[in-house]
Amino acid sequence: MGSVVADVFRWGDGVLHQLDYCEMTDTTLTAADSWLVTDGTALALDLHRSRFLAAAPGSEEFWDAAIAAIPRTGDWFPRVERHSDGRFLFRQRSAPELRRSLTLITHRAADPRRAPAVKGPDLDAMRRLRTAAQAEGADEAVILSPDGYVVESSQSAIAWWRGSILCTPPAEFARCDSVTARSLIGLAGALGVDLLEEAVTPNELDGTEIWALNALHGPRIVTGWHEGPQPAELPGRLQLWRDRLTRLRRAL
Image 1 (cartoon, rainbow, N blue to C red):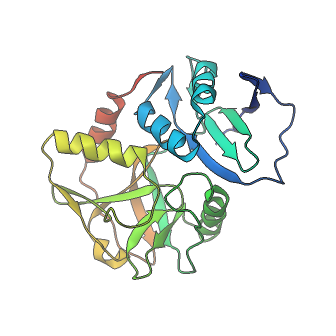
Image 2: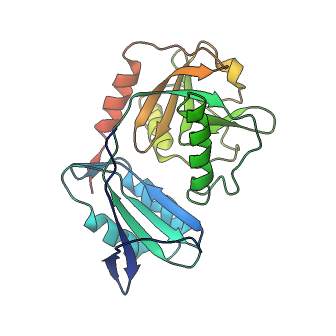
Image 3: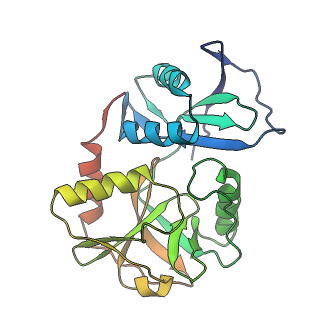
């Protein structure tokens, strides 16, 4: 994987000011959002905007300036941030290598999230969770509810297929409102696919096709789950839905 190039800008006086460095050790992240931009197009940017503005009221002008600053050619993974001292930062990042598959491991310790419904405050904790998963040979760790049910992974929403039925964890489970999952579910519903919310333990996913969904990679298929269920795959289904979501991308 190539290195990610990033420029950092601070919002002030109605303008984005590029920073030579960014030292934020005295603040905490209160809201953040990121999305994949490919040649000036993105998936469901309006949903990313709504999610960020809900967590960072009064950031409309900052958001518009950040969108205007994104190059219209190439692959980018920008991030907007609001910090506890009121500062807004925009990170213009090149997109890392994109992947279509990953492996998972179940997180067995205490849930490290402190604000699971808001994207931003738990990013560092989720990054540490992913690092720990990678040390065990997996790509991401799956967080369980207090009753042992699948909620989400350290970087992704989780969905699975029971035959032709697209399944997701119950809406009342505390987790980030994934834009990619919302886009997939909305498209599936519009195409007449049966949808089901169900509370499942990892072992109850044995033999199902399991997907991890996030704004960078889109839907990825789970090819292994360490000491967990054995996933399956219906050939062609993942690519079909990745292509369908790609066709929903719109200009910034």
